[in-house]
Length: 217
Image (cartoon, rainbow, N blue to C red; front, side, top):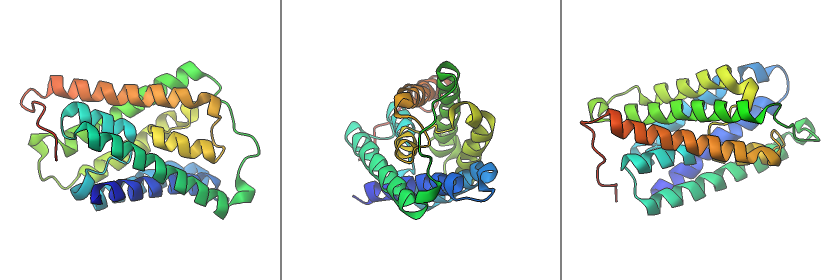
């Protein structure tokens, strides 16, 4: 249960920060990727030793393929991640109701957005697997910073194309906050899970010394 609570808390603060940084008013929007990367970094450092600090169903899928988590825990992680995202989105709606868009924007180009989400989520999951699960990096002290910076960099790189979710739970949260049209949710489901799966498969192929291990109990 401790693992699930940790995943819920981390995902909650990730989505809450996204919602408030973008919708909080003032000129904070241009700095949103910095705030989002920073909160992910600190939540990874805070919860990594308990749950692995996924906070993202696509990362959980990558870790499942890697062999570091079992299917039962993976499903539970995804459920609590989505619950955390929903709770955060509802709190943002309560905190800044006047700043929420009256109509959710549509993606201007769904194919480009799909590619952007797949590539960026692949980068995120690839970094997570290599800095947090590879034997060569066991005990390192930089994994949270690497993960947070990856999200920040990808958000600045492709956020204008896809919105920069890189996370199906985040997509649910931003949908509730009307930052994304629900008709575009498939882009984030397919792109993010696709990127996570590709990262897991490629990690297992490249890291020959890191054969998939029995999942954690």
